[in-house]
Image (tube, rainbow, N blue to C red):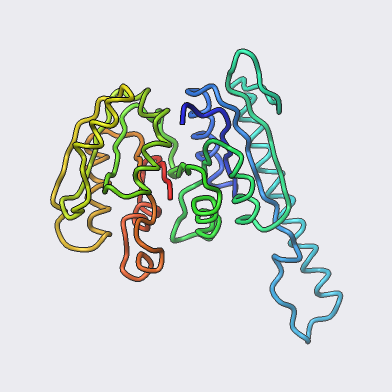
Length: 290
């Protein structure tokens, strides 16, 4: 990938929207990209639980009305936040490419199932930005995140709860030699070529990992990378993931690049895994590819 020209950021709720939109605009400014803010408004008919035989038509109508009002209020609040952030940062709102290229933004609202809309919309963008899921909250849903990651075919950037002041100056690559990790590195080249430092982190348990070969590959793209392989204590992907995350923070990284679900999602769900741990525990922006 030669650069990011379009960025789609998914604004799911008012709590995570500021950090998610903030990250997308930060990346957009660094790469002179167009940022499209997408909010999927819930279809009340699908949001209301299955109606039992004992419910009257009036009760069903009332439930639909409440769901519609809540969806409209949520959408209006997020759109207001979007417009305020763009105004305060002097970002022009447009749907057309500008000459010369500069950071621009646009609002996009659709009604439907969030995971389906995100997957389809994400196929025609250079980078997706979505909030990191939380174990304590339903929004953003893991279903929407997995749809973005597995069904869009595009790189996905996870936004942490707190917006950092920079992204991509000091990059940590979690390398295990997998196809997914190789795709993530290729997708991250626009960041890697601008970075001040790049560190390749690998666990010695990953026999297929070859950080030296990756460093040699990156050199052909003008990227100088250092290597650090370590033995992760304990067993299982969860321990490896935590060691990687700790190393990235210790080394001052402001972006993590990694492949996602290099083992099956079922195995990760049952046994734990690096992807699952990072999805819920990363405090840094993470660029993922499957």
